[in-house]
Image (cartoon, rainbow, N blue to C red):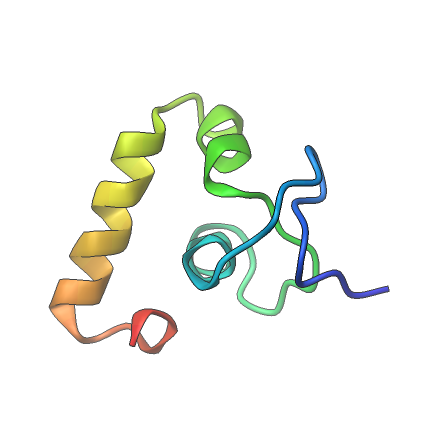
Amino acid sequence: MANYSTCKQCGSKLFDDDRAIYRKLIFRNADEFLCIKCLADYFDTTEEKINQLIERFRKSGECTLFR
């Protein structure tokens, strides 16, 4: 069952950027998502690095997930 509103790991509220970066990095057709914090833990990186990726994709204007 699709869950677009909460993180599948910690249950926190999801925002558009959470869903977009998950789809970009994990699975384009996902219907369950990790929040940025849990995604950072998954990749063993920081939330800041994930947010920098989001900004890079947004500024490039090439990725439709971040428009």
